[in-house]
Image (cartoon, rainbow, N blue to C red; front, side, top):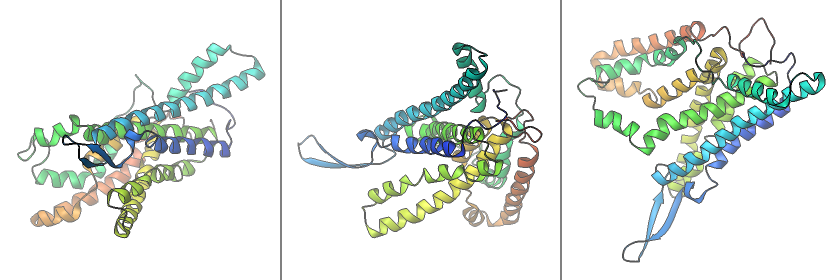
Length: 330
């Protein structure tokens, strides 16, 4: 259990500023280096003629540069949480004269790990990890019908596994991205809002807006890559609004999981799983498997009902700092 305080030690304004810093530093870091920026660059080919190369977000050099930048930003955000907790502990002990500086630093470090949900070797229930797969019962069932689940006839090690583990795009999409985003936009952001005494509703429904807004920079990238035309602007706007909507909704889901479980691991697993599965394709599945229409719809509905039940009954860790009905601790 982390160090707790009887009154919120951080102001709401301070929490807003720190949370905005977390989100903005993560996005801005992606553009600080020339190697991480997208667009067209000119270079000399073997015949010394000018050649133009379109650098997209899936270019390996861009991915490597952005992963380095995002790593630094993520570590910095976690360090800020630690420094905040350490400063709060020092302020309290300056009044009471209780602990030396080295002891305070150790207490603050352990408390920071717990507040970020980075607890190890604790007996956590596996049930929170099953919530998201239950929501995907419909897509999983359709995948089974298409014989594309692991080790079925239409599943391929080379096509379905190697691109995930053996490419920069796969590593970014399925591992690196979820890890850094959950640490910054869930663990760090929610920990500072909790220190400010924010309500659960605010932490669940307002903090994910930062996660959604952090994806708006994709609109500029798409506009540039599609030629900076009016059509490109319209396409970028529509795609980005849709992305803003579903990333914000997904943020609600992950924030709820984090607060209930008191751990970053269930939302992290959920993030990875959703990236693996992608958005449900029920229209395509019904068209591809018309003779299974009723059973597919039933499994989608069962997944929704099961998800509602599981979110309510399978996610709560009674030791979670963030979900204490009988205690007000910050």
